[in-house]
Image 1 (cartoon, rainbow, N blue to C red):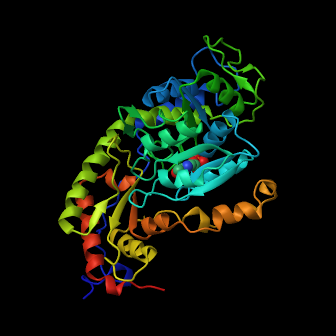
Image 2 (cartoon, helix red, strand yellow):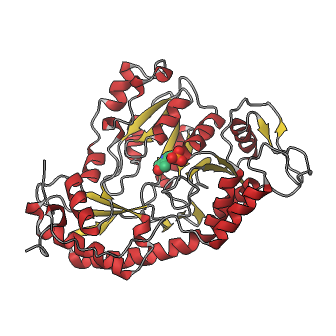
Image 3 (spheres, rainbow, N blue to C red):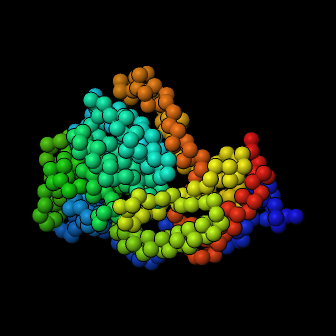
Length: 428
Ligand SMILES: *Cc1c(COP(=O)(O)O)cnc(C)c1O
C-alpha cells in the first residue's frame, strides 16, 4: 500500500505539502538596511566616506562584542579568515599545521595557501571534532599551530587542545565557521584560541551570501591581520573624516584584498540582530527532537563536551547505532529519510583523506609544499574514528529547526518509518 511504502520507493512521504522554513530569514528591516547601503553609494571600505562609520566597522565592533573579544576584522570569505589568521601568526613554508580530517576542505586548504603543510588528524568518534590524543600523535618539530573546528552542533575539546598547544608552544586557531555564538566556560567560542575564524557563507547561522571574519584579543596581531586583508592598509583609530579614506597606507605587512563589501556588512548588521533569538528557537525544537529521539530509542544527538555552555546548531547531527538501518550505507539511509521529509538529509562530509575536494597534487601552486611523503603521511592513512562517526550520523541543516513542533514530529516519524522498513532501502 502506497501510504506505508518508503517515499524513496514511490510511496507517500511523511511530510505533507507544507513548506519548510526558508533560510536566511529576512524582512522589511533587512530591505531597509541593504537599500540604505546601496543608496549611500559607499560600497567598499576602500572609498572615501561621508564621515559616518562604515557598515563594516559597525559590524566589526558588534561582532567582536558578540564573541567576547576586543578586535574583529571582517573579510570576504571564511576561507580568507583562516588564511589571514595563519599568515598573521607568521605561519608559512616549512611549518606544519594540524587539521581535523573531518571538516570543510577550507580548514586544510587555507594551510596550503600560506605555503605550510596541513597534517590531518583523526576525530573523537562521539563528536566528530578533533581528537586531542590524535593531535599529540601528529605533533612534529615543525608543528606550529592547531586548527580546532567546532563541527556541526558541538564544540571541540577546548580545554585539552589549549593544554596541548600551551605545552608545545603552538598557536590554537578556532575555526568557528559552524559555531557562531556557541559558548564554553563562560565565554564565546573563538575567544579561546589566539584567533577565531568565522564564515558568513549563505548556509551558516550568520549569513551574508559570502563573508567571514577573524576575532582576536591581541592588538598587534589585529594590526597585522588588518594589513593582510586590505593591501597593507589599516585603520589607525580616530573618527572618519568626510571625503577622506579611513584606511591608512601602513605597509608593515604586505597584504592583498580580502575586504568585505559595505553591502554584505549591511546584511550582516541585520542578521546579527536576529541571531540570538534564532539560537533560542533552534534550541527549543532541538530539545523537543531529543525527547522524541530518546522515546524512539536507538537514536541520540551528537553530544556536547561537559564544559560547553551553549551550542550553536549549524548542522544538527542524529547518531544511530550501527545496524539500525540494516546493511544500508549512510548515504542511502540519508536519501531515504530525506525523501520522507522532502528536504535534504545527508551524512557528514567525506573525510579529507578520501575527499576529491582535497587533492593538493592537482595544482602547481602547492607542488613545492605537497610532496609524496606528505601525501602518504596525511592522505595515505586511515582515520577510523572519522569513518565510524560519518557512517552513523545523519545531518539536518539548521533551518529545519526554525519552524515548529509539527516539523519535529515529521523528522521523528520519518526516522521511525525508514528504520521499520530498513530492509527496503534501495542500495547500489
Ligand atoms: C564554511 C566553512 C569554512 C569556509 O568558509 P567560506 O566562507 O565558505 O570560505 C571553513 N571552515 C569550516 C569548518 C566551514 O564550515
